[in-house]
Image 1: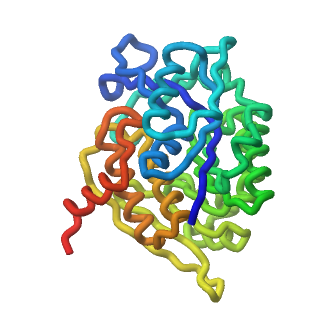
Image 2: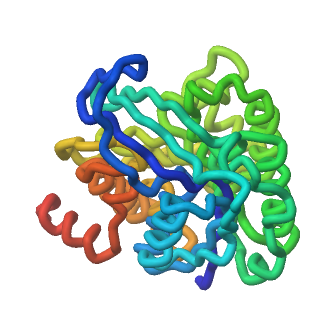
Length: 321
């Protein structure tokens, strides 16, 4: 099946604390800048797999912005939807690790060039041959950004396209009221839902089990749900021909975790791309697990994106038949 993916949201630079448990209120060393932003990492991974993808975002007319655009272009992302602004600087994020999975962030997104992303930046001509939109919850950081996302969503849906949604919840963003209010709207149109296991309870109506939550979401119109579990693997939920809940689990891979940032984005990009390309669910899940494992093995949020050949090579080394 031929498809072209669109995603919308933050493109920024990221600085990583050199030491674990490094506090933001004390002087310390940081490594970077690295190109980052959840939708940008997603787009980069899709492009590395060899599929067409366009990113809509904003950066400043500064060295950080040029670095981000050049990296995406080199990896094959269509950059025509990225606007460079002279009125604001490129967004940034500072990351400190408490352990291999728990992270603290300081974001500069709403007051950066990313914060200027709006309805008018979504060019209908650039979307004319796109038939899938991927939405990141972290990209719903302002009314303007939400308006941009809704425009892209409406354009894609009105021509029969599909939507995938990764909540990508960050505790640093829970006080952004617009984000929470937009989740209900996005979920109404979502075809592929990609929460991590610690995000599932956010979508529960009461004290429900994971399977009850999944059943309710599927009966409300979502077609595919994948619960990401990192090294533990992933659970897929769907409805069979009799409208009964089916679940598929595919184990993950234990690798030395260097930097977990971006692993979920790479997982989602790989699963969505391969599902759209017609791969069986089990294969798409397995490849997505590898994509996530390769992502955590490199320092920098976008440095671990992988090609299909690299994923297949990893599988040949880690799975014996």
